[in-house]
Image (cartoon, rainbow, N blue to C red):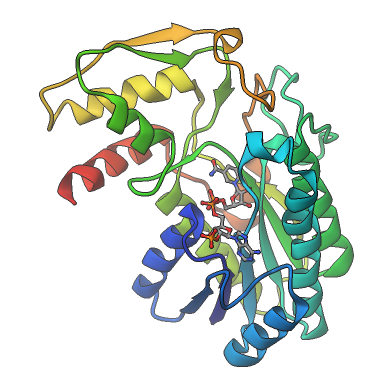
Length: 294
Ligand SMILES: NC(=O)c1ccc[n+]([C@@H]2O[C@H](COP(=O)([O-])OP(=O)(O)OC[C@H]3O[C@@H](n4cnc5c(N)ncnc54)[C@H](OP(=O)(O)O)[C@@H]3O)[C@@H](O)[C@H]2O)c1
């Protein structure tokens, strides 16, 4: 399988690039923005000609949720128009696209986990741009799988886990939001699942698999719960275990409102692909171990 991954330095792309070599049937070729700018059709054409992929994974995105509120054009140019251009280039060659999306397409008011058939109602520019991106991919390339995920963390780069570990100096208590809930998703776990899905899409026939799916870590917690688990795990190898004080969302204002409920029901993915992500706590354990090993 020749896999073209749009994005290079991103959290999910890096996890894909690290996981792919362990699968001998996959030749993954990731292209950073300089080689593959998803806003530029000529750049996309070049990447397709150079790589001749039989599956494309789109991880490229404008992901600065707060900045997007004042930078709408840039968010839509990447998350909607870039996604469409990539999906179109793939469709012209009859190549399937696996497009990564987000729980931000929902408003977070539902009490239960969101299922794929729930009506999206994004409350932020970022969420609107990602929803439009999903629609653009689906309209442009019938051979698409859209995977919505959430609360992605990993051992490197800037993300919630690395931020918590960096701020834990043992002297100051951390104040972390406790009234938003989600499914923390360990980037390497997500990457392994995406590669599995990509493999299935490359193998014919993949009919009956096209569509939108949810894929997030198993289990639910709050940001406060996640921070507490990360620090509890880290204390195995560190002397410090600072207190984590639960706070309300109103005490942590952001330019873009955060959904109260970001949880995703991932049953459809299990039903159709037989795939499910491990419990989020396993992701935390692996993340902390990896962080302290490196
Ligand atoms: N992180 C999360 O918690 C989370 C949650 C739910 C869904 N997701 C989704 O998962 C996907 C990947 O997210 P992530 O966390 O890996 O994001 P990320 O770390 O912000 O990475 C985004 C990537 O997009 C690339 N990019 C930016 N502009 C580009 C362009 N014009 N052409 C090509 N590439 C461009 C960036 O490249 P540069 O490095 O060159 O800037 C970067 O590699 C996104 O669709 C995101 O919405 C993420």
